[in-house]
Image 1 (tube, rainbow, N blue to C red):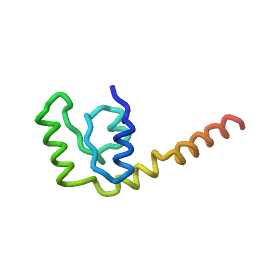
Image 2 (tube, rainbow, N blue to C red; image 1 turned 30 degrees about the vertical axis):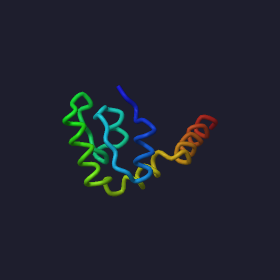
Image 3 (cartoon, rainbow, N blue to C red; image 1 turned 180 degrees about the horizontal axis):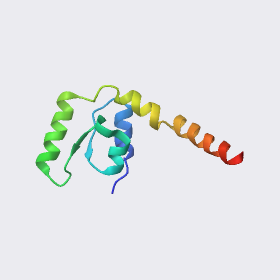
Length: 87
């Protein structure tokens, strides 16, 4: 069970192709916007990394990541929760 690591979020925020194991939480964050591999299979890792290198990032990954996972977005979401609790 793995949460999206900062390296995955940072890579996507920079518009760089990312590769990860297809764990539920990572898929929940990025869906089909990044490439996945079987982390226990060296051939799968190699294939996915080479594909990411050759094809680059999926279109719009940078904008998607900045819109949904920036500190500003998190702070705004948290502020709304606090405001609802105070009412």
